[in-house]
Image (cartoon, rainbow, N blue to C red; front, side, top):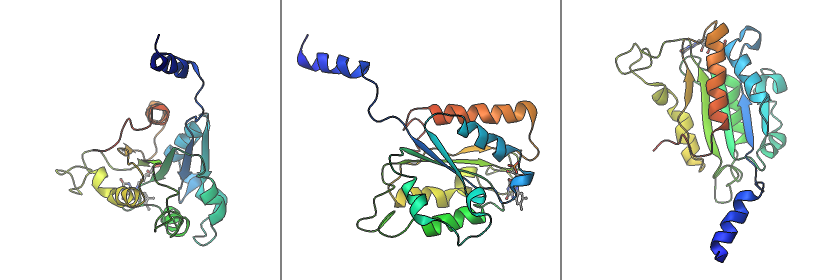
Amino acid sequence: MNEGAQNSRHRTHQPSLNPMKTLVIVSHPYPDQSQAIRALQQTAQALPNVEVRNLETLYGHDTTAFDVAAEQKAHEGVNRVVYLFPIHWFNLTPMLKAYLNQVWTYGWAFGPDGKALAGKEMQVVVTAGATAHTYSAQGLIHSSIEEVLTPMKASAFYVGMPYAEPLAFFEAMGASGDKLTGFQQALQARLTAPLGDALVA
Ligand SMILES: Cc1cc2nc3c(=O)[nH]c(=O)nc-3n(C[C@H](O)[C@H](O)[C@H](O)COP(=O)(O)O)c2cc1C
């Protein structure tokens, strides 16, 4: 056996020195009324090597209260960052928008030395009250969920994060039973898939 083959055989039998680590940032403006996001958060929390940070749990609704150093530190060693939130008026939640404004700082996320997020995959996961048809060119809003989420895609590329296809759960208002279980299974499948599996072209 040549050295290359030996090395590659050796590698496949070694435990990974750099295990996949995922950070999940969750935001929901009315957590007490949440079914879908609550269940999806529980799914993420049950997975190994996943840290969940719920912005309203940590900071309430105070858009100025972020512990920026702690939020930035939570990204250390992370390969995939997930943003989990309900679509409200075809937009991010107020706390998630404020989080981006304050945590993604110049010199950390962007600027000449701001490379902290570069190379970490961005996975957006949303719940929406409307139907999949509503989120289509023929539907009421004449826009796909991918188009609605363009600010996240643009932000990802701006800071050098490979951007995965968003995972969207439609007709999520009041979801329960099998529907909720289906959402949870789809999220688990996406979070346990290898990096790069669902990247946009
Ligand atoms: C103030 C508000 C605005 C909403 N705006 C939208 C919207 O723009 N598009 C949409 O599809 N659903 C919208 N919804 C529905 C929520 O997205 C839906 O109820 C939520 O995703 C379900 O998840 P939950 O059970 O965790 O709350 C809105 C709901 C509220 C309360």
